[in-house]
Image 1: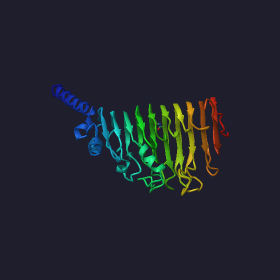
Image 2 (image 1 turned 30 degrees about the vertical axis):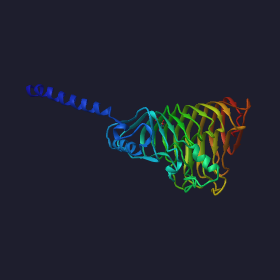
Image 3 (image 1 turned 90 degrees about the vertical axis):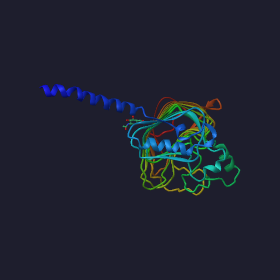
Image 4 (image 1 turned 90 degrees about the horizontal axis):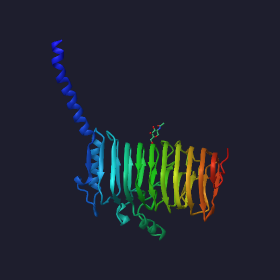
Length: 354
Ligand SMILES: *[C@@H]1O[C@H](CO)[C@@H](O)[C@H](O)[C@H]1NC(C)=O
């Protein structure tokens, strides 16, 4: 008995020390400035960001990477995993791509998160300065990455995600000449909220069907976001190529469209330049896609388009409380091989087959 009671205080002391040690580590923060990032918008901060990422990625404790106010110049970068613990990017400042888009090279992305689980991005203004690139392409000149080495490669997407799970992106403003956010094969359990997107191409799932053997995309939510003058709003796109990929359990809700080209679009026959694309039966199966409370204005007459292949129809599309107008009047919808249901007020009228 005496032995037990005398050892108890030591035991508790040990527990307390471990507890304090862990709780101080749980709040582990790295500031990109301490790795040499400069908020002047001119100094290349890519390496400091990568060093901060690599330190966070190695840490066995959850880590917050803090990006303070100011403008940070970032070139094409991959934040790769797998990482040991949860990583949060807390961004108070602005990330900009080089204004001379040649500096992005042929990477086909700007900021790529690859093979990571449990990453959250909060806040920030993300400016890919894509307009120069698109002006270059429209001018018919040879532009980097626009050379499209790989069918899926377009530049400069703001955020591209590849094979990841458990990602949150919240409260960011994203300006780009391409997709504000694109989720590619293998993305799962992704939560995107309070995004301001535009200019840009909207938020995309895909392109899918890059490969015959690819992982599917599932459980993706995009909510409480505003799209301003973007080429698309929420888009699912896949190449018409045989593939065992899929997109399912996807929710787009509480979205505002302001003069958006194609606010709601599924394109199973994706072919951006209408040339050199596969025109096979798409193996990418699209099912279980919900659109709820999506309102605003369309910049084109067809605000809602579901273009699916007869060999692989889209199924389980749900529409609820949609109101998209064009030129002050109702917009129209387009359906091909698209199945699902609608409820509440849906403008334009649903053309889904049961
Ligand atoms: C779906 O993803 C969310 C995060 O966006 C997660 O909280 C939830 O557990 C996931 N659901 C399933 C069934 O995996």
